[in-house]
Structure formats: structure tokens, C-alpha cells
Length: 215
Image 1 (cartoon, helix red, strand yellow):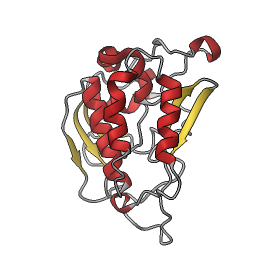
Image 2: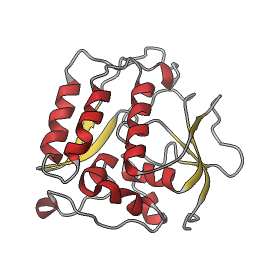
Image 3: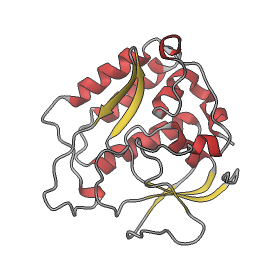
Image 4: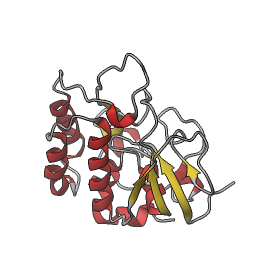
């Protein structure tokens, strides 16, 4: 069953350079809420993103400090800077997108956030999400949960776990009937790759990204 064209309220998890469908949910919702009371979940978009490298799909993973109790809220999950992952991610992004039409316009703002060395994962991700949403022309306020509920109240569309790198179901883009190819630099090698990080859509389409996202 297809989603309504306009979503009343959507609940999202935090994410690192989230995929296109994440921002499609934001662009087509009247209210956007972010989960800040959950505990950290491994192998999710909370600490990883997917970009289009010269050899195809490339995952960038942000390391975090281990929580022996597995009980800390996501807002207290700390980033691990013992390896120079910031430089590694910047170099990967540059190699992937330096020849795209818009990367040079966005690079400094993106790098400034990465190089700010924020302590907590949630804060870093929020800065990235707000920047990418603004660059894409998405105008919405983000509110935050005050406590964790397995099932959100009312008509809120819960996408906390559905937007997941391991998901094998129909993508949100398909359900919104907006899934379609756009220009990608390396598509001549691997073909079009759908639902990569929003960074991919922005670098290739720039201000036209909002037209792609709107149902």
C-alpha cells in the first residue's frame, strides 16, 4: 500500500549523512521528529553512509566509543577519534564527487562540520542533517522525543528502523513514487545507484534536489 503524498508526522532516527529517502520523508512531512531517547544501534545509518565511489558503492563508517552497559541514550554516544577517520572520509568524498557540478560549493561547509570534532554522535549527525536539509531547500523544524516509545502515538509514521542499510523491502522513494534516476558521475561504470547518501544527490543535482524529493 502506497504512502500518502503528504505525511502528517514522521519519526526518524539520527543518521550520518542519511540516504535520499530520509530527506524525502522530511520534505513530504508536515512535522518531523527525531528519536533521541533510544540506545545506540550498530550496523545502521546512525554511523554509516553510502556514497558512489569510482569502484561502485562505498560505505563510510564513523567509529564510536564502546558502551559496556549498552544502555546509554543515543545522545551520550561518543565519537572515537583515535583513528583519523575524518580525513579518510573527506578524501573519499573528494574522490567520489570532485568532478560533480556542485561539490565545490558545498565542500567547505561539510568539512567544517566534520573537522569541528564534536564529542557526541547525535550532535554531529544533527549538524550534518540540518546542513544537508538546508542545502536541499527543505524547510522544516525538527522536534525531539522526550522519552522512548516502541510504538509512536497517533498517526506518526515510524521510520526509525525502516530506513536501514540492511532493508530489503520497498524503499520509501518507491512508495512515494519519486524513485527515478538522476545524473551520477560514475554511472557509466556501475549504472545508476539509488538511495545513496543525500550527499550524492546534492553534489550531482544541487538546487534541483528539492524537485527530486517532493512527491
